[in-house]
Image (cartoon, rainbow, N blue to C red; front, side, top):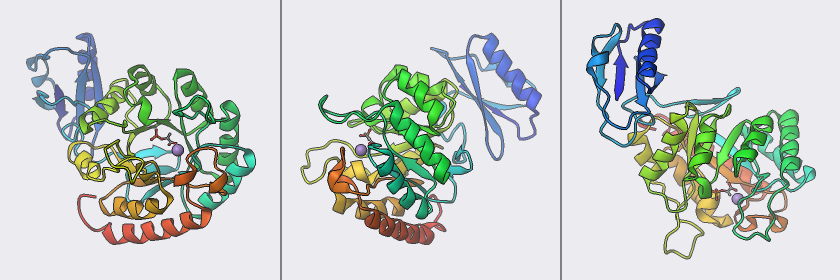
Length: 339
Ligand code: PEP
Ligand code: MN
């Protein structure tokens, strides 16, 4: 159920509705929009009686939700969400750039890449300290030491740190050192981790699962929101298909398809989405043309020596060229509506 408040509803009227929802044993999620606040109701298995709310002061209308989503939808919040990360943001007019190595390998490596990322004007630095590797014998990341290096990068360059948590204890650590928690493709349906992310103090970058439908991906975001964390950025990173010329098939249609349903920002990862250095630039440009809110790009100071995802890592020079190109495209498409 969705309770739409009148445009002139007061804060205390909104609070009162939320209190009554709570008394009934449910949870109310007030999401303020530009025109009005709507309150999503979660925690109910069946229908909640609308009549209890319809005549309450400040209530404009009560809508029964028939779709599987309650909180991620444009029905609840017709305006796009802008996720604020300190003085940076994702979902606003600016194209957000999240760039850095696949994994933090050493202080020297992280700083060499961060210098180029900062110089490009990007506001976000990515780098894994905990890596979800297919083989247990591959480099697993530096762990907490990697997070300490990332915190130093933030100190030195003012970049916001986006880094993955593989499990709940990792999330405690990322909350301590980072600015945004990445939930990787392999964990997109790790429901206890999603719930933990919903109680986290940081915004969440939620990658699409390797074989997730749009609905499953959006429901994963719904898990996080239902726990009270409304700061979520979706990330399209390709899905597994029969093709052999790329590591994954980057589903750029997902960007406008998400936009049609959800107020959440969506960014694109052409690095994992293609797995190949030469394809990252073309697909990044295409992603901007379809209206992505940002890009997440893997870049390394010595790609040939990278301990993970070497084949898809850009050199520092290639990275800077890509940023120049995507900024040009973004400037051109900015006036087109529905981005
Ligand atoms: C990554 O960003 O390095 C990563 C492991 O991504 P994904 O979860 O999309 O594979
Ligand atoms: Mn990677």
